[in-house]
Image (cartoon, rainbow, N blue to C red):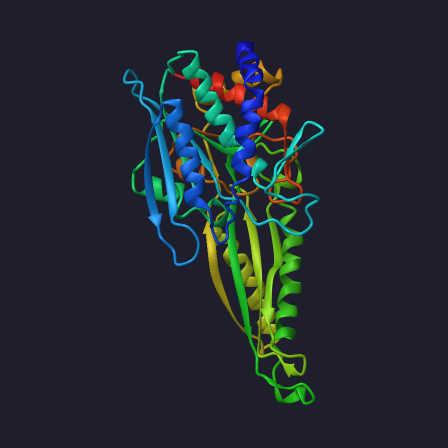
Length: 402
């Protein structure tokens, strides 16, 4: 399998160029732009490799691009099993704090900088290059290969892989997608519960606050109580593998979004804050919601004037893939042969599109080009070393899986 590293290094210039050209297309989501341009580019690469492609349009929103899913297939005709590799092509917005233009790739000190480099355009380049190498070497995979390139992962993925899975437009006996890098592979992710707690008061002139009821005051008391719950959650810990002690615990963040009030001299008649609750697999969203509602109810009992509504904005249960007898051991062997390290299964703190396959009982692994651990951060980058190694790992996996 060392041969794969040599082959990838011979294609190093083309591999980096492909990743760079993907970064140059600013598929920023929200609102979701340049999707047509991105799909045109990826489809041309797939067809040049010799893959058959199909487009599936999930939606045509009023703002932004059509939600286009591209599926590329290599059906060997001899095999019943299919390896599905998913990549999303949308990226989060970039702030003004970048040192360079986030959509003009920069290579410096063995790193490739650019928005979406780690999340996850370098992966798209790695997958396409791995398949190209196999085609160039006339190596027939031991499985059928299905690649999906999907939109909107950064805003939930309903028009992306979730759409393809629900409509039964893709199939998989094994699934590979976004995840960790190096010696860690993601085999699941935490659950998620997003809430908005909206407080209703009564507006009045700022010079006569007694005539109103300050919704902001009620919100502050409730938020303080919820922060107390967040501290208590640190006592819980999952039994599944993780990268760090912090990853092993549930988490809760208040105030990612805060709103309310209209003018400095008006008693606010409405205030709201968000709650982002992440769950370990041993928890459920129903139980987590109940815990939060109990805290808010206790605050209202102590302060009868407080009025509020809790809105569930999104909820996802935690998922964990089985480490089956075929897929995970083989992937682990590929990583060990390339990196000379033992692969470690770990739970991801954030959610990925692989959850849709995991819920179906399909053995799934999340593995990505890394080096910076700076997804969504300013000055995002991947290491070129990781780009080469990950491409070699993907190459070995595709040609070895049966």
